[in-house]
Image (cartoon, rainbow, N blue to C red; front, side, top):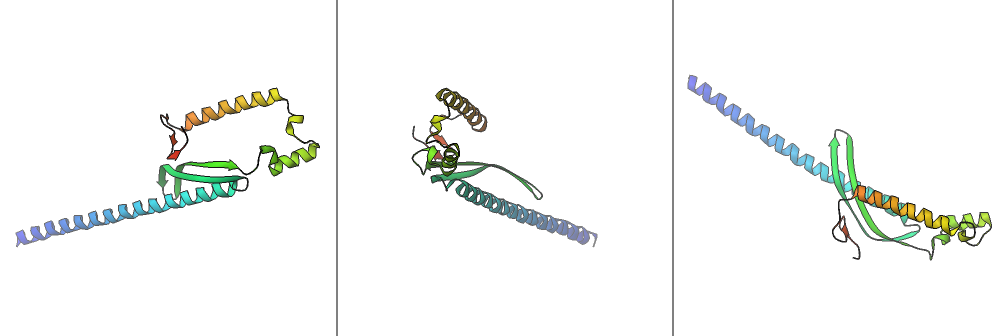
Length: 155
């Protein structure tokens, strides 16, 4: 009789462990599925945002994005998104952009070159290029080939 009780306890503990493991497996499968769903929503939102903010003045092609770092803690989500695309200005020059046309109209000039010295443009371009390079070096791992985040650029 005592052996039957011990056997029932052992079987009960074994079944409880199996049930617990099943629940844990279901929870992790649900979390993985939930994570994939959230990442998909993040990527869709990012693409919509990118398109909404750039398509007015640029043709966009070869858009790609990925979630490189994803962390979820309760209701808080942290994600780093790497996005790239080929953007081509829809105008022949930057001066043809509507807001640039407005600036030229306000200043009553035909070209910004009339009011901005070439030396200033050269200096500011060098500073901007330097800052852009710092940002790229900070954000990206060393690149040994013409591919950034899966986007292929001409070598």
